[in-house]
Image (cartoon, rainbow, N blue to C red):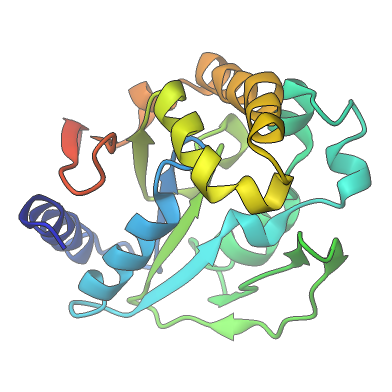
Length: 223
């Protein structure tokens, strides 16, 4: 791990260790596709775990069925932004139970997107002083905002997103041309729609530029 990334993780971990609401701390790690959200959340979980208990959830475990996700068209940006994830289950089974007055019993995963099938998972009870780290796209959308205690948004430009996707998603989509088509017609425009409607870079508590994931830059640190 580079010095710059390590220093940032320590700063984030210190900040989150000091946030002590009377319920588990709910942290969103948001950003576009291939921004490094899962990598950052996993690294942060290891560092923060030395300071307080940590729970990890990904919005990728709360997809909707493929028939719902593609109902507006396989390449629809609106379908990507509006229909990809089951936010009702994420709120009802994860964020509210870990929020004020909740019973701290949360569902770690609900859907297997690769199998396109629901997952039967047992609820987990989080310690009162736990920090929940949730990574995923579109986490600062209006219907989720009230359920976060701290929000982190990762900035990566569209061309860098596509460059990374050509490495990460080649096996998923089968060819470089198909990766480019999916990103240029669905995923990148869907992210533009999200930025226009939710303005995550303006609303997040912490905004990080992860163009170089080993040398992240702090763009904003609002509280």
